[in-house]
Image (cartoon, rainbow, N blue to C red):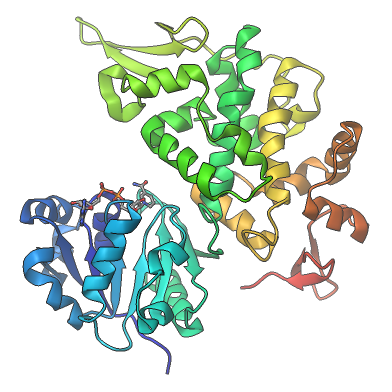
Length: 433
Ligand code: NAD
C-alpha cells in the first residue's frame, strides 16, 4: 500500500499557499492553514470557497505547529528564502507523523539546498511540488524528487495532483527553476536583451509583443506584456538565482542581468501591473472624464507615450512561419522565439528525461499553443536545422538526435496507431498516458 494523501497542512497562506489550500479543500480534503500571524491566515482563508471552509482549520506557527501531526501532506509555501525554509522544516520534522509526505513550493531553490542537513526520514519523504500562479487556474504541477526521495512519495503526489486537483503532472529534475520557468524565463530574459536592436531601429514594443504572440503560438501578452504580469521584481530574483545556479556554459548566463533601462525601471519601482500608477512597460491611465487611456513606456526615449496599434503587415498567420521571413519581424521572431526553441532542445536530459515533460510544462505553465518540440514539428524541423547550420553553429542535442534518426518530426504515430515520441537515445517510445 503506497502513501495516501487525504489531508493537507499548508504552511504559509500567501498567494500560493492560499491557492493550494483552496484547491485542496475544493477537492474535499481536510486542510490546515498556518502562517506567522492570525491576520495572514485570515487573508489567505478568503481564497477558500465559503462552501469548503468547514474543511479548513487555521492557526499560527507559534501556537499550532504541533497540529500538523494530524495531516498526510505538509506543504510549505512560505517566503522564498532557503534559510527560513530550512528552519521551518527542522521544526516540523519531529512533529509530523510517520508515512506523511512533505514538500516545498519553491520557485527555484534546489531541493538539495533545502534538504541539506535535515534528517534521513525527511530526505526520504520530501519533494518539490511546484504549482503555478494562480493555483486554481494553471494546470501545470511540477514534481521534483530529491536524491533520496522514496518513489512512493512521488507516486502519491502525482496521483493526488492528477486525480484530486485535476492538474497536469510534469516530472522535473532538481535543476535551477525546474522545467517551465527555466525555458519560460529564458524567453523573457533573453527577449529583453535581444529586442534592443529592433527597438533602436524603430520597431514598437506593441509590434514586438504582437509578433511574439499569436504568430508563434504564444498568448497575446507576448514579451513585455508577460513580464508586466509577472513583475520586474520577480524577474530580477529569477535572474539572480539563474546567475548562481545555471551550469557553466549555459546560454542563459548572457541574459541573467537586466539591460540598463529595465534596471532603472526596477530601481524606481516601475515593476509592472502590480505597481499600478507607476506601471511597467505599459499602464492604464484613468482620465478626468472617467475614461481610460493605455500608455506605453517607450524603452528608447524612456518616456510615456500613448499606446499604438501593432503593425503585423506581412507577418504570416501560419504558426511560426514568421521565423523564416526575411524581415525585421522575421529576425526578431527567429532570435527570441527560435532561440528559446533551440535552448529547450538543448536541455534534454539535463532538466527532463524526455521531450514530453518539456512540452507539457510549457503548454500548461505558459499557455503556448504547442510545446517547444511540438512547435518544431509544426514549423518544419528541416527548416530549423537548415537555418541553424547556415549560422554555422552546432545543433542542440535533441535536434542532433532527430537528424541522426533521420526523422522529420519528434512525434509520430506508431504502427499500432499509438502516438510515440523520439527518446534521447533515438528510440521511439509511447507517450505515457
Ligand atoms: P507570499 O509573499 O504571497 O506568501 C509568503 C508567506 O510566507 C506569507 O503568508 C508570509 O506571512 C509568510 N512568511 C514570510 N516570512 C516568513 C518567515 N520568516 N517565516 C515563515 N513564514 C513567513 O509568497 P508566494 O507568492 O505565495 O510564494 C510562496 C512560495 O511559492 C515561494 O517559495 C515562492 O517562490 C513560490 N512560488 C511563487 C509563485 C508566484 O507566482 N507567486 C509561483 C510558484 C512558486
